[in-house]
Length: 114
Image (cartoon, rainbow, N blue to C red):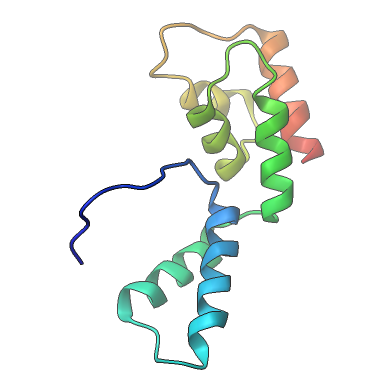
């Protein structure tokens, strides 16, 4: 498939991707057989999506309220759902700053509620 231009671009969590792919699957199920790539994408989303799309959106929105947070990291945290401080530190490893214990605890609190 050749793409001429990008109309819109947005970061999605894996749960949101799963929701979109499920909608595509339902729409195309009656019309045609699903292609290999689409079937693989659906399988991948089903395996790795954690929670629902609504939960993921709410988690990203709450994470975005924090000071040292950007959209990419918030989506990554919502996808991975880290349970330890070390896992969080690994997500922030490429950043030019480190998080305090209080900031780590706040992020983990949001993840556990979500």
